[in-house]
Image (cartoon, rainbow, N blue to C red; front, side):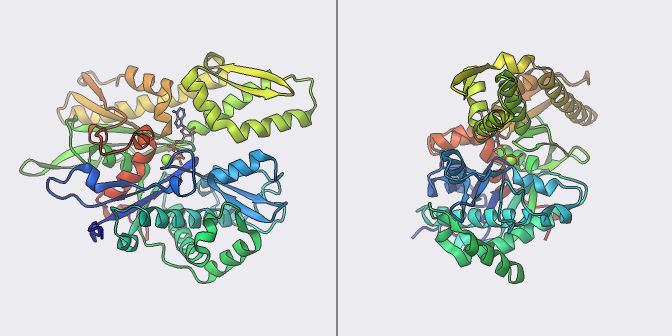
Length: 457
Ligand SMILES: Nc1ncnc2c1ncn2[C@@H]1O[C@H](COP(=O)(O)OP(=O)(O)OP(=O)(O)O)[C@@H](O)[C@H]1O
Ligand SMILES: [Mg+2]
């Protein structure tokens, strides 16, 4: 029987705009290597996602077959043409709404749910139930983890949507309802043939009147979680570190400062007033890339043909964009003709240039503000951590390499490797290292020592 059933263990679920992740971390023990403490959960492997650690944040309400599909299977379903329903993606951003209640109780668009039976909040709860079940399965199939770890308190990672914590309090409630649904439907949630829509509706209604316990003890700001992940296991870094976490829906920024807490011991504290969240992130790059493709399609073609093209591009946009940045080009077919888009086509585009400028201005501003704090503390260097899937983008890496703060005292910017040395060892598998910037937030959320302000429930 595995012995890893420490009461201090925590799971952090990172419900991402594009992909969701979860990690379990055990509390530090003297001399224990990171690989014994950090357990990224293979939630993707449970349902044969492309990457064992990632699950796509997507749903399809298949109206032809009266089933709801989750994750990569939802996208595959939509691509197969077996349903005309449009997949629901990036729905985490419902939580960014100005009027939360209004948005969450609105019905889903008819193109997504023709039956009109589901509200936007239902999508959040159903998908979270799916994630909850995946976390359970992933822990149970990991020989090194004790099943009792599933009873420990959990956290989730959050962006700073708006002042106040209404969205976080709401999300904690979503986890409670999701727990009831995960218990009621069990592995039926993971059925490759999807879940019956009537059963999903009934489970949602039951969970609203009788929620379960999602075990959520609190929430951790995404950029702070990224800092915790990179800095938890030591390594030489300047005393002040800027964190830039560019995900799909949001870019989250913060900075931390090292403070001594005893002989040869220190802790990382967040520098107040530096948190920021912007909606300038990878989804915007997808939108701009799709717009370039549409521009290049034959404009004399019917609107219906262009709509079909737009829909197909939307279903493939993330892998297309990843190919564009990896190979320098990507291709899509329109009415029997191949359209090639080169990275230069995107980089030259006026709207993309504006996007990049806005991102660079926010980065410069954050860097300068950290630099001022560092200079006031007598330091002459600052560290920079890049996290989130956007940190793979070449222009983001170049921006981080080339930007200098306008504070003369700061002479050195230490851009940290996207995979810290503690995670590069042979004890961690290659698939984990490949997506490290994306999974870093769930790891950091699980290792973070929580300050009272991080608690939302
Ligand atoms: N190698 C890569 N090249 C280009 N883009 C990439 C690469 N790897 C990941 N991405 C992009 O990163 C994004 C996903 O990143 P991440 O998982 O950090 O976002 P998220 O957590 O889902 O979003 P958010 O934090 O905003 O809720 C997707 O848009 C994905 O296409
Ligand atoms: Mg994220």
